[in-house]
Each structure stands twice: as structure tokens, then as C-alpha cells.
Image (tube, rainbow, N blue to C red):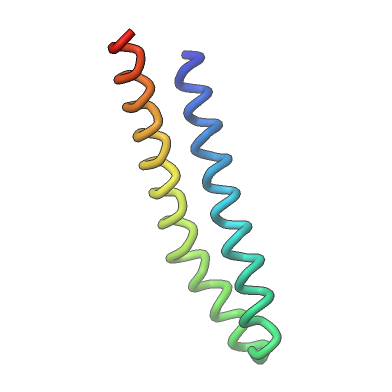
Length: 76
């Protein structure tokens, strides 16, 4: 159970970092050049595409870390 919680925490941390990096860079680069309607559309599109993609990526990264840690433990 402890391992599950550690990897769930790793997944959530990775998800949050990916999203905040994307959000910060988008706000710095694109937001000043968009009109209000484009900002709303962009935000909705981000929720539909970017969030699920980052969540999937975070799960994949956590599974890779889990697989690597199992491999390293088996070699000891």
C-alpha cells in the first residue's frame, strides 16, 4: 500500500509540474496576443486535450519508475 501511495504521489507531482510549465509558457507567449474569445476557446481546448495528455504521461512515467525500481531490487 505504501508503494502505491508513493507512486500515486509521483504521478500527481509529475502531472502538476507538466501542467504548470505548459500553463506558464502559454501565458507568457500566447495570451497577450489573444482576444478574450480566443482565450476562452484556448482554455477549453487545453482542458480537453492537454490535461488528459499530461495525466497519461504522468502515469507512464510513474510506471517506468516502478519498473526500474523493481529491476534494480531484483539485481541486488
